Amino acid sequence: MQHSEKEQAIALAAIFQAAELVANLARKGNTDQSYAEPILSSILMVNAPTTEDIYGGPFDCQSNLALGRRIATEVMGKGKDAVNPDTIRYALSMIHLESKLHKDSDMLAAIGQRLNQLERQLEHYDSVMHENVIAGISGMYQDTLSKLSFRIQVHGDSRFLQQSHVAHQVRAILMAGIRAAMLWRQVGGRRWHLIFKRKALLKQLEGRF
Image 1 (cartoon, rainbow, N blue to C red):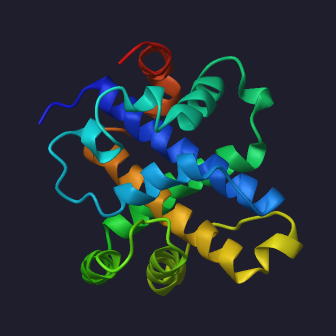
Image 2 (cartoon, rainbow, N blue to C red; image 1 turned 30 degrees about the vertical axis):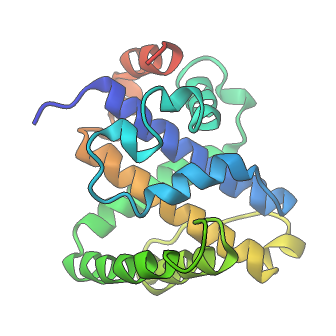
């Protein structure tokens, strides 16, 4: 199936949004909930009609993914030096970790089972942002992806990272980043595209969808 560079740009924006949110949590102990909600919600969007619908529908990079779109534009363009190096490292690590997950059918099955549990859990709460839902997503990450040989090392202020609610948010958003990296692969994105398709992707990130 032929996928568009627009779809790849959406996935890339989601990856960088997750990476930036993790970096902010690690340094400051908090993050913008309006940007966290759409990517956390995407974890449970298994059968979305279109790529855009995964993150809230048309023009998603103008709103729900605005932070990731800005960061991705800076990284792919001339503003890389203005981006937190940890954000870039987390983004690339998410893509790498997802490639490991893609080859592990047992872990993919385990994640599928946990997603079913999360869907049932979400029925009892009004939002994916509820602390119990976030803790559930965090637990899914901890019981699966954190067991792989490659692990994403999060650096920041230990005063925040040692707080359980912050740690839960970090792991939950990392899970959302892996979901975005999975989408990136599914729509044809490859790591080498970040170098050799920069202009095409940048055009999509800068333009109006």
